[in-house]
Length: 353
Image (cartoon, rainbow, N blue to C red):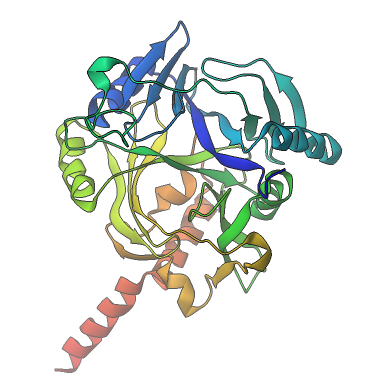
């Protein structure tokens, strides 16, 4: 048996009421390859993804949202351990037949209803001749175009109870808890970022201020370099895609982010950077920031948007946002936004002269 249960995030299923438009977004704007389409779903992959036949499944649905997260086990023995642990702790949904590209999988759900599946047997992707790269270390050739996402990076969930969902991934799937946000005033966990191995995070969990359960905040695809990330903004604008927040710099995960809403209504992050944490889980103490202190201002260090209200409330499926929550967020943003503090100082100095 290996020291970890999960090898990596294999794919994400997004539900979309506009599947043709969603396919257009991922295939034409993000330069992903459409590898299969059937009556209800489309399967796509990015150019730098090893082995996996696809990393994104788009499924026609009345509403946008998360279908499921799929994880590749580190071994068949680890898959069976996940099943045994899930049956014991009550999170199990049971075994399901394999879908396109992989064998049977064990399904389990978070305390808030997010569906996860874990599998071991998987068809290894082999690029057709016209997609093969001259660089043998690349699964397929690098696409032409300004935005050519390299791989699926992570998925971030909304949760009304961050702690319970975090413990699901720590206890049931063996993830390492890298970073988190909490309120020292209330004692509540506000955000958590966990990894199956050594990355900054494979799954993020953000407190859902609406109180809803089981929603998706965003999925993220990784870009090769910062130039691609910046040029991508122009491509998105030219094609009528709404840029919700960014470009910006994350303090948490030490990375760069840009958030857009794809035509089906789901949020997608174009992600660059991040870190590798090679410290063993048993020897690691999570980095926790208190949003009620100075350190809490730098979860996002700079950029356009600095946690706009919609990022903290809009998720899929869409639910109403209470006016009280909107007022609370507006007040919190004024307190935490470092630019507002700097601006106040500049204005005060100007009035004194």
